[in-house]
Image 1 (tube, rainbow, N blue to C red):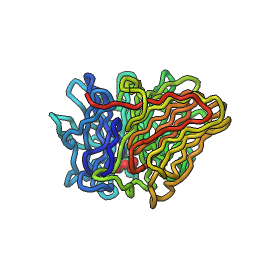
Image 2 (cartoon, rainbow, N blue to C red):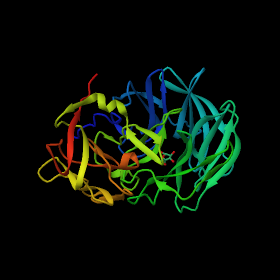
Image 3 (tube, protein in one colour):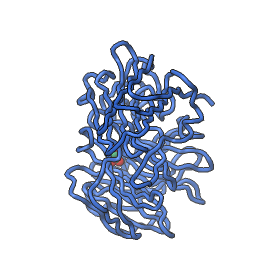
Image 4 (cartoon, rainbow, N blue to C red):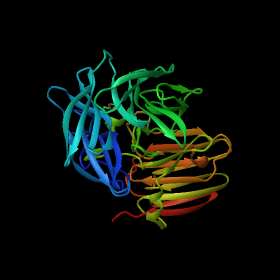
Length: 404
Ligand code: FRU
């Protein structure tokens, strides 16, 4: 029996990939997601739907969007809360044809209004995400090797604005333009060439004048673990959530009766660079000591390590020294998954700072260097944590309670 994560969204049954339509309306968090209800592998894409009072405890709702016999499957997209209700903008994908459609959440089902942005002749033309800019909507989409920007006053008529590209020899997916504390940032998921091989996420700082995004310099990885993909912000906030997986082995992940989880939402901020902190509501659920879901504060005094033990053979290890932070998941299950048993290493650029380590049933999320370095990894231990040992640091061990 696979244990379920406590503070991470999973579908009751079936497959989940990208978060879609993330939005908070009147205090209720909505997260839709790429969903195949019929199998624990990727397949005909639906939009699953879950709601939460706090971004941590999720309840699955009826499936919001299902494949359309003519227009095809429902690929990634976003949601916007309007006076007319919750607008869902997403890609209809049929064979190799992709175009953008608009639906409305009526009750707990999505009601299709129709296609709002037909394909101009591109092989890749998907994953719309919108932000409010001045008095109009600006949409980012992937064009395969570039971000396409469009604008609209009403979300129904979209006009092209510009394109943003950079020589990266990989497939671009799920782009998002963000304004973080006044700083423009372009986030793009890349299908290959991630920080630990397979998929990953890059971002550029830059400037957006309402029409063009111009990057300043080269892209940086958003997360340095293996399992952070297709992040999306909750529309109008600086909170971001991502799929905690890697396309390299996602279809082979053995959890049942579900496959796929999202990260804990992260607060993004700009302070001399992009920084990430786990959702502050986690702190309200902390109890001292060991439990199923751990939240560990680590204050390094020297180079050192934290070992989280599961069974006799299984442990996850986080280490730091004066140059790097690593996550070692060579003894965390996952035998047979391509490239899974590995040590993930990332430079912290000066000091590891204080570390925060979150461990749930199949995940480890490490925040270091004041949020400027994160490592997110899937782990597949066969039991709950049984002990934690620490070397070279002072640490506080908490577990997180769920329930109401
Ligand atoms: C990213 C992605 C998107 C697409 C969706 C299909 O993981 O490939 O580009 O819309 O997943 O499920």
